[in-house]
Image 1: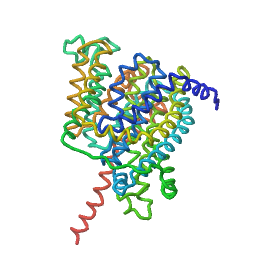
Image 2: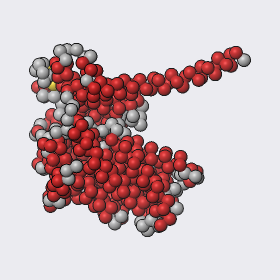
Image 3: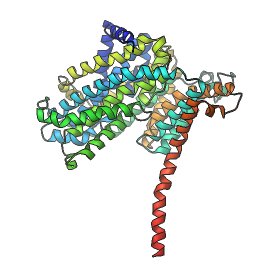
Length: 504
């Protein structure tokens, strides 16, 4: 393995401007993680217009820092307030808040900081080793393979999520429909424009992201938390004891592995990784009844896993051009804004971006470890600010950001429309993630599928004759049929039992 590109990547990261943007990213990420409900997705969506005036490497380094920095920030509210600042920190509430009630809030936060650092660092090493191999393999990909991967990505993000599967699939279908609005790139025909010149240009990614993730989250969380008053728990010593570290080391190691593997999967991400790591530790424990009552492993495992997953989710984005989750879809959009196409050619055409972003995570994780513990007091003060004060400021920044991209009032209108749509989706149990991911992948799926049909002379069976695309489509069929097969397997024993009862 040639290590010169990796070393050059460190040279890129150590440039003063890039170090500054890395620092800014992780600080913003930690702050956003502390503010319940806003999250890295909403923040990245709001900051997308700013990336126009920043170089590609600096912009993606900052956005990446926001993403993995938010994973630790969400821990603070989970431990101190029993209020997860991030969806991936929901599991941390169970034992983190229990430890806080026992006067061990500092221990919980210290273990979370150490686990986050270890999990993130191990995942970065894996990313450094695995990403170039995947990128080299992906050079064999053509339009049929990209069409198959895009369909698989939409299907997985719809079926592996935590919510209602049918609602997730419906949201993904809506995203695919929105992606078709505008002029057909092959024929020039207008689709679903209703005579509007603005719609003829298609719907831009930024208003959709800022509306669904920014404005909708603000509206929803204002309604949910307007009348709730929380008092943060007191924080004592933040350095864990040797006994706590001894109890947690196995959980941290297993959480790193679980997070890295699940983070690569489309639809997996930090949320599923934290749940899986917590479930694994509880199942392995000699005294599972300790979990939920203040087990240190119950904090170490999910916090390690969600940071490891946040890092490994960059593998499919950078090497295949497939965002593994909704936040990766936003970073995908940021790369496109910079004129950079994520995929197999990224490592050769833009090695400064590829290795600069990966190596910046080493620096970012060290910065997080250094800053997380001293800044706990600052975060506690931020938690005392009422959402009614923060929300109007955030809304104003969101709308101004949308306007400054193209200087069109129409974009502000779109943000409001998608903000209301996102609010209604959350009210009725629809997650916006599948919609955004499907929208991002929709154009790629359509263009790749049509190019593939041209290659095969209009015969769709050609997609199944190529080894890679045929294998991916086989996986698509298995994933789509798996719920039906599992339901049939469950019904059969029940039917056999009924027959036995009838005979008796």
